[in-house]
Length: 219
Image 1 (cartoon, one colour):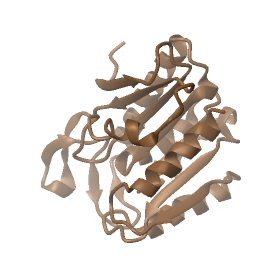
Image 2: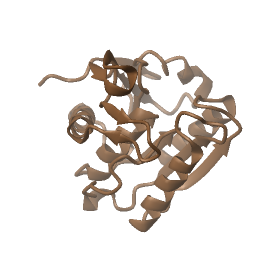
Image 3: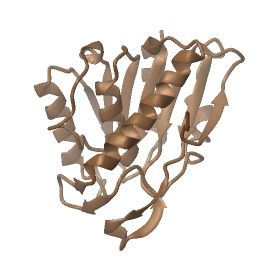
């Protein structure tokens, strides 16, 4: 099978958990690799971090220029007009990575999906539709692009979800993060939600909170 090209970092030999972490529009799988030491995870927690690279595709809002993207964005409205076929394809590619981890011997209940911006939108679709229970879903500075169309699998109706967002974000305004939280609650999820005084970025306080959430999810 053809998998997404990924950067992979293991915190110990023979890891017992996996974190699949998706980057945002125009970025790459390299972007979040430097965060691993900042997470300061305990040595006893063996994690395989997987950072996929999005394919190079034309993006309408950037005048059709090709760049790393999980799907095309047609309009930058608050609800975002996107290419639904492409986001489903990206979600399927992420699920394939999850399945590969299961084949490598990682229990699905010890696999976390996390994504920033576009990557987070893909993770919403992939995690909620996946047919085996996952450990958790972490979304950062993103929105729930498929909130009206996602088919939630019974295996993940109790999935722990943590939403992180910047109150000064002008790219993906905080209202979009709040909408994601409300949409999840309408579907009977109980997402936690935390904001930081930042723009469309990641801050140290957020990294520390992500670390705590990863540790509690894999405890």
